[in-house]
Image (cartoon, rainbow, N blue to C red):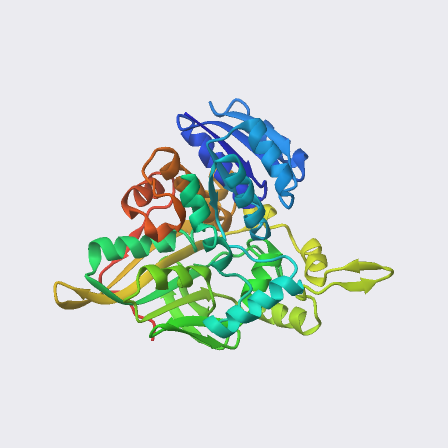
Length: 419
């Protein structure tokens, strides 16, 4: 019996909440909180009579730590699930520390204002020391390790699919398939079609920042950074077919490099169609991806926020998205003195997700792992205090839960490798 505060009410939160309500013997009470309480009320009303979980709602501005603290003290949850924006990770972590509550999120911290002088100074120092220039990294949240350990609390970072499940796949491969891992390639394929000329499958602001940033990968103990979209490969994905994929910087590379230090190379690839890339390049060229405020007709606006308001809401893509996703990890290394390769992945159908929870597969593949990660913490399967990423825990019960609640994995012992 557990009480959980879930902050956020977008597409991913919608999935996570509905999946929590399928496990009401653990998630006995849920409070859904967001800046827009009406969205929370609407979701709660849609679940009425369909679950034994008791659901309440609340209004909270997650940018304000004092508001989050007040809500936590009022509701007294056993766990706070942060499924809002990565901009709010630190304020919610601060609130959890102040109230003595465990914490979970689905994406690592990045600042909303990348022109903030104080943040910029730390960021530029990190770029020189680490060798990659993405705005998001784990350093800000890893800095909370001793605080959470001292408080006897756990903060579980990045418990979506990638990051999240991909790291569990790495831990599973390390535990069961390899004595030593040499290379890891993480492949994220979305073979779905929503019919729009241009739309993003999750928060447009976060998505477009991530995709337009320089790519980078881990090679022989250091970062190698490349121009955005400059490394392209074609791969034949099971149940999807051949797709073009591009090397991106992605957060789980950073933690996997720490926790599987023998890996000589770690890369992340994501598929994109040419139409998406053409639209994105055009928007970038005219300044619409900028996070720097500009004056327009007497008021200040942020171009990428204005663009977000124009694009389709990812939460509305479910009924019109068809096709499948395929996300997984390819490993090479050694087992019992012999060279081997191994591929573990999940295939998810957009329309099956919509029929179950009213969502497309991108939100589903992030929301289900968030629920399963919460399940691990609430049932005592994962108990390590401090600030941790998924690959630091036993992968077996987590993958069993994923299999049970909608994201089963497939395996291949002779996969096509990425050159």
